[in-house]
Length: 197
Ligand code: GNR
Ligand code: NI
Image (cartoon, rainbow, N blue to C red; front, side, top):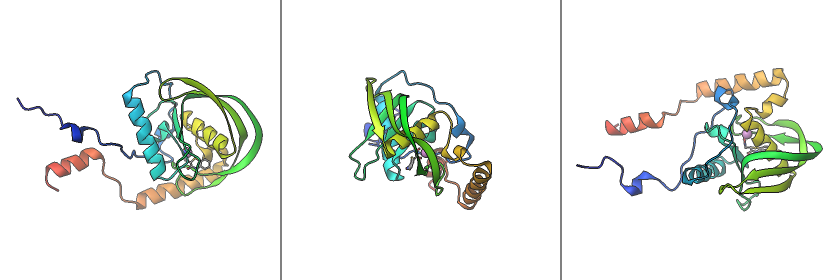
């Protein structure tokens, strides 16, 4: 009897780019739940999220943005990919020094506006092995972590703007999406390949 599984070298490509959900997709409003299992599948998801974030390019990515509603964040605020950080089940222990920074979001493409946030935070989280750690972040790294933690709560930076601005942004992105051809999903691509298209 022939195995209908893929050969091992086709089974698990080294890494994969994940699709990023875009505002106003209602799935971005899902509240993420804590991670309890620290296994190879989680490690693989983390690697795929880093690849997706670097390719975008962005300085942070929350699992919510790739439709995985678990409390997982990857970040790298360096210029040369030298500061990869993973936060699982993060909690902010303290915040100080409120200030304003211009933010953008891969789920709200092409839109930038100012948001007020703590410029220094103390964080407790787990790493990819499930080991707890604490750290202090400041500047862009503090702002980015809070932006990502908002994603895990189903919140977006445009929620801090006025209703008028948010509605304008929604209409602009809805129009851009209508004018952009839809990306076929992977099931359609496989079906097409099977039919020799
Ligand atoms: O790439 C990103 N840049 C950024 C700039 C200022 C404040 C926050 C961010 S996060 C964003 C990537 C993203 O959307 N993460 O959720
Ligand atoms: Ni974002």
